[in-house]
Length: 173
Length: 257
Ligand SMILES: [Zn+2]
Image (cartoon, rainbow over all chains, first blue to last red; front, side):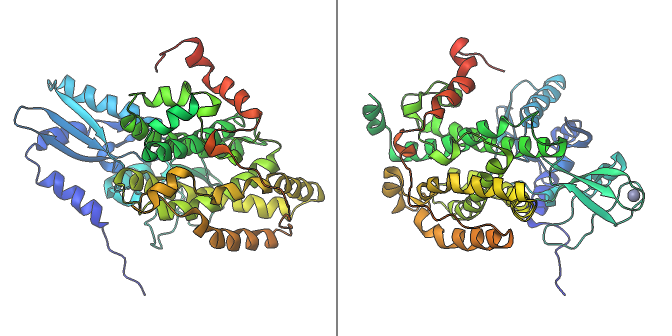
């Protein structure tokens, strides 16, 4: 039997950066910024928001990590981050995109997974873990893969063989 | 003209541009299936794979733009260079053909890129390593899908088998170029910036042979091979591809989203 760490080490570091941050109010503000394609999921819960740095001159740098190389939502997210901070009166904002370490669904928070489920999208399993894919409607794990690819880069298409509902699965990468 | 530009550019820029060109040109080919794939799920799948390639291209062009002494932007590098300045390997630019040909190419490339990126992600150049690590994850699921298609079409009907075999025969001579080191790569090897392409051949052979056998396909035994992409010597269709892809920036220079 293999023991799977409950939390991904990089996710732990991400949580610590937030907990130990000198500007918790900025992090809280950014919770309003959602994935434009899955509007229930904040960029924090999605694992995209990495860090917030405020320098002595008050310049805010927000670091985000793209989900997929070609994810068209990233530009929108960067714009939404700027807008959210501007509206709160922060005028000097830079959004930086950081490729490594590469984003993984293991950075998604428990809250994020639950929100996905309620939205009708099966949350990702844990990499190298044995979590089964469950139908978000009836919770059955008797499901079949329809296509490795769905309506956005992050999703695959499944169908539940118990209740027959087709559903999106947020694929695990 | 072209030679003068090439020598002015550093080996690193040439290498990064070549990686970007490979990804962009294949992405542009894949997008041709958008709205015309065999069925909706496949349409989405090809478009998604295409996006991953365009994203990879963009990541490399952004880096190339920073390295470029002529200060061209990522968009300018992609949209305002001519065919002779593009250094993509020829296999990426071949027309899409039928669905079997597209999947045959995708499969041989997916097998290659899974191996290649796994090495490139250990590049001593952090930017290159980061882009490779990101793309490597995406190639895993590209290969899962293209491998399924090879099995299904190869071991499917007589028609699908014939079409896939023909597709493989047609592209086989373009494969050796994947395993050749460019001048830039030869210069960068010692510093551990790029991957040793030739060293990837045994792993590629093993994977491809296994799948082809399972799919009841015959590994083509062809005596011809073509190369020249890295030096900017392309097939006839390359110019048409660029004309289509670059139209907007040529007609309305500087347009942005
Ligand atoms: Zn169900």
